[in-house]
Amino acid sequence: MQVDEATVQRIAGLARIKVTPEEAKALQTELSGILNWVEQLDEVDTSAVEPMTRVVPIALPKRKDEVTDGEIPDQVTKNAPQTEDHFFVVPKVIE
Amino acid sequence: MTDLTTLTLTQARDGLRKKDFSATELTEAFLRAIEAGNGSLNAFVLPTPDHALAQAKASDARLAASDPRPLEGIPLGHKDLFCTNGVRTTACSRILGNFVPTYESSVGANLWNAGAVMLGKLNNDEFAMGSSNETSAFGPVVSPWRRKGKDGKLTEAKLVPGGSSGGSSAAVAAGLCLGATATDTGGSIRQPAALTGTVGIKPTYGRCSRWGIVAFASSLDQAGPIAKTVEDAALMLGAMAGYDPKDSTCVDAPVPDYAAQMRQGVKGLRVGVPKEYRVEGMSKEIEALWQQGIAWLKAAGATIHEISLPHTKYALPAYYIVAPAEASSNLARYDGVRYGLRVPGKDIIDMYCETRAAGFGKEVRRRVLIGTYVLSAGYYDAYYLKAQKVRTLIKRDFDEAWNTVDVVLTPTTPSPAFAFGEKTGDPLAMYLEDIFTVTVNMAGLPGMSVPAGLSSEGTPLGLQFIGKPFDEGTLFRAGKVIEDAAGRFNAPDKWWLAGSKGR
Image (cartoon, rainbow over all chains, first blue to last red; front, side):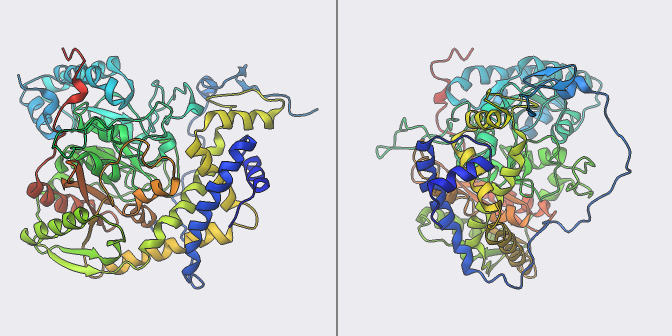
């Protein structure tokens, strides 16, 4: 799989990472190299194989549907870059 | 008095209980060692002396009352991937900035409840992505080991301590702590242990809680110890492991007395040697080390059986789909809103993109992009689903092997420690460091690296044992045989203390 610059920019957009044109060039080569290398998996016949969903065969435990913590807005917002009255502040989203 | 930093964890525990020295004296000895050596090694990114001395004081009270907990007064290093209540936690990434958790990881809480003392936070590859500790935002860790030149003298070239738990392995090998926490997603406990002459065990997936550990690849991540000896590792894992309702993949099973299991020997143990691990380009000395390990196990009463794990060669490429895919999803949380770095942008999307470009290092960006690519519309089946199917086959190989053997013996790494910069230019060359370790994560099995010899350059080499699910005890038994036969390996010259006052 040869990744072109437009694909790198499209993926970077999906990943929400700004990539400069120079970085995109380098990434083109690196990503293509890695993707070409993983393509050796095509040699393996997996037509009758189930994908792995968990390595240890245990059932997902359930707990009671009840509140076990909360009332800690100071802690929740303590590390935020910008807060106001226990709200996270972000740039305006709606015009 | 003897240098307390040269004791093993087990010896220190016994010394504390016999009141040969106090927990405060022991902790102070390690704080001095950190002060003297960390400038050269960069193993700790945040020493926490006040925190350590407070814990040591509490331990001294328990020891005075003859009521010690299992790790009472034992000074440990703590990988910076574990969240620590009130103590900065960064995963060695710029994007977490000055993040100070308001909670403690479950594994950390288990250790402190067992009486252990935290000396500080240890360096690692950014978000645990790397095999040399060169991707850390705090700069690389220097291995205490140095290569011997042709004249037999130690060379100046800085060697890597392995990764991602490079701070852990270097700190233990250099005597800056008695043991260290670590995490392993593709080999990040075992490979650094092998490169520094220390013991590292990644337990079965589900043995240790992942709650409060900065997530890399959730279906592969496990915590475990790096320690000086097999018994030290057994004591540490016993304290770290255990059921935790806060991690739904954590298994509710009793944690055995690993140190007691360790003493059971290997008489009659069936050891498998997989022919697929005899890879092209493996050095002669690694092959010789492997044969030596086989001979030691035979001499101790084990039987050796050639086995086949036919899908071994596909584990690494499958890993480099699964791990980046899960990482791209886990790392989506770093958006500059709730914690960590924020770089302003012209709108909220631009803020996300600027923040993540500035906050993530090169290797992390590369893996997030690969992960985003393999999960993107139209590619999911071809890459991610395919890799998860191959993973089923890798696990099936092991399931079949367990019909004829009890444990598997392999080398831990294909080569000894390398120098700074030797593999940073080529991501694929770095990824090959994990070739022998990654199958274990893909199948969720326990794996342990034990020091077994030195390379022709005088640097450590490790052997790896792979066990059945939740059968860590057999790894300790087998590891102990290698340790007893091979002896322990210490860096030949404490060069990192030169130039420091050393008090």
